[in-house]
Image (cartoon, rainbow, N blue to C red; front, side, top):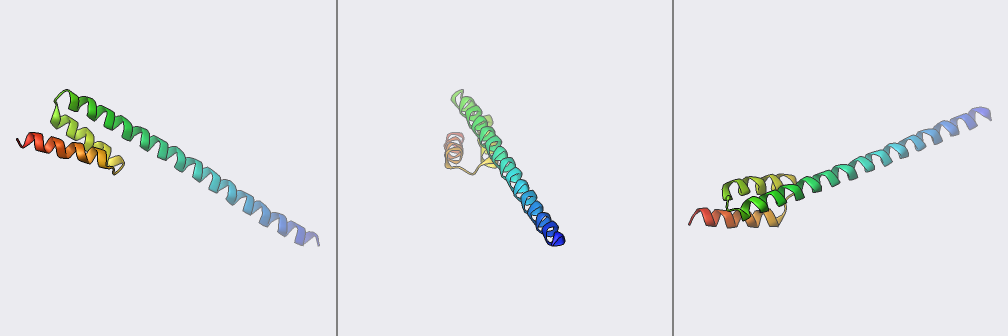
Length: 88
């Protein structure tokens, strides 16, 4: 009977341990997602600022950095605008 109780406790401890590992992994993923989004916003804001100064080549570089972080239409559209401006 004691062996059965000890075995059940061992199983429950393992389950609890796995649940804690999952929680930690989820927290880490959420933190990574937030940092990624923050870096993306910063790259877009930087690119917009450079674009508004008329420095299209450097703005394009920053928009590409944003695209490397998160695939989104906004930077892509700005790159298309810049390419049209540079090809005029």
